[in-house]
Image (spheres, rainbow, N blue to C red):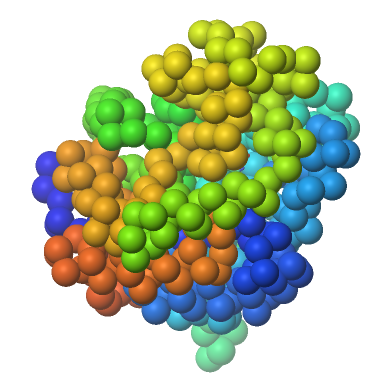
Length: 452
Ligand SMILES: Cc1cc2nc3c(=O)[nH]c(=O)nc-3n(C[C@H](O)[C@H](O)[C@H](O)COP(=O)(O)O)c2cc1C
């Protein structure tokens, strides 16, 4: 497979930063979560550095079980991503905008309409991070006592995405002629009703907005269980993943590309972008000091609560001796199965005690960490890229905005100096910038004579 030698970069835009205690640092605006200017400034920094996109994660719920944990995190005071991305679309020009939305609790008609709108608003810079809901507290916000089971969530997601794509294809690209002379606004021979009837949805269509500028907004996925990887291989054009090491990353990359290839997809149309949590200092010691300062902000209730959640709420760590070793297995979770496995595998490999594991989870949640000088952080990234563990990275500042600024000021120039990152946008749309093809209209292809 040919690659152009340059990595793709996205900014995982997390309010105060990925570290749950980061909001306590004096440099972090405490009200940033609900301040458009705060996000716009970070998007501008990423755009100035020619990042490919900014990414907003989401769960329509709080993530924490106990008040003691809820009391100490800043995250439950933040914008809904599609709303925020719409606002950012008018504050940015070139950078891609990735918003998360779950297929478990959104209806596909709304999804198709919102993301088509976002693609028009941004002139072709929108992407949808398709998630299936992995958080315990989402179900009760939508009338379910529990989340639907893992397989059901993926089955529903598969059908939802088919419906969404079908709706985007209900109008051919040139259907809206808007001809004042003839009085014909839209050529209905270029309209294709969807008339979908499936196991989860019945949707007639058409969509009440023109086909998105990109055909389809870019489809992003992060499934990592067997079911999740299969889903990502079928339709993910950008695939996010948490890989704590080069070896893990290489394994995931090879596995996912292989699965995608088996489905007839080309390697360069499936971009694997693991997360990286960089903590950069002018010396290694300075970077370590920054990490230690962040760690000092994190209360034990937060450490324990976060670990219980990422392990899938199958343990009660308060009754555990934190200096005992982590067991090799725990009961399977109905939440994010792959992350539980990743963390347990890592704990077994590193012979972690619970105390070490909960600290690791708080620092990186399973993502690759790079704590060091600009040169060292760049080395880690280039090694992952050159050895085919990644096509680029989702950069996750541990603390914002300072962690982003450090990365942009210190690491990006180093990546450029070594020919691994661009210094200008290569196209107008996100697809063009990522080298992803614009999908043809399947409904138009299926009926040469128009309406079907
Ligand atoms: C970088 C990254 C970002 C993610 N963002 C979200 C998110 O915003 N909302 C969500 O519900 N899940 C999110 N996930 C979780 C995935 O969608 C998926 O549930 C997870 O990777 C586990 O997949 P599995 O259920 O197949 O094990 C994210 C995962 C990664 C690696």
